[in-house]
Amino acid sequence: MMETSRITGKRIEKYLSEGKRFDGRKLDEFREIIIETEISNKAEGSARVRIGKTEVLVGVKLGVAEPYPDSQDKGNLMVNSELLPLSSARFESGPPKFPSIEIGRLVDRAIRESKFIELEKLCIKEGEKVWSVFIDVYSINDDGNLIDAAGIGAVVALKNAKFPKYDEKTEKIIYGEFTNKKLPLSKEIPIIITVSKIGDSLIVDPALEEEDISEARITIGGSIEGNLFSIQKGNSKEITIEEMHEILELSEKTRKKVYSKIEEYIR
Image (cartoon, rainbow, N blue to C red; front, top):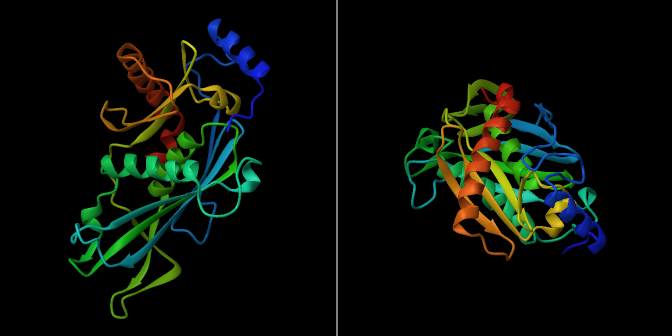
């Protein structure tokens, strides 16, 4: 639901038509990104990501379970997202609604389709036991672009995750005790970039007010090597072929900029 007033929306559109944004940024400029790791001593991996005033927490838990029926020799991956009421008056307690489900799906698709986690290396005994990777995303403050923050947080938390101790005799995990073994991850890192269309303008890292008046949104999961893993459109306005080319080019340039800002946390 749009909660930004029409007057504010018109002012934002006017700024964009002049090549600037209401918060002083350029159209292709990301807000400051701040990352903290190992913020939870219970999770196998964790990260706090701030993009401007937007903030998310991401935790990674590892468990042992049966493999999925269609991947008997691969580990399992599950991504869950919760938009907490403490992060915005727009969010309510209760069963997850579409925005929460969508963030989980977008993060899941980028990680799964990029094969960032080498799931075949998480098989303990084919057809019987595999490692399961659980990624939980929690919103702490919503000032726009929770999607990209969640994507960054998931990658950073995975890169910092360590296996818990596993007793092969009892086939039980010793939670709270960690090994030095890290998750098997690809060198090619998926980074999610969202581009919003407002009027004739395309912008990255939309603030909350910009999200409210966005006519179309394209979220792209890709790597700095130039590979694309996922693309999803949001909102009702159509995107022309010419605009899609611009969006792909803009997302590629932005992805490289974002990577340079978070590189030290994902090496």
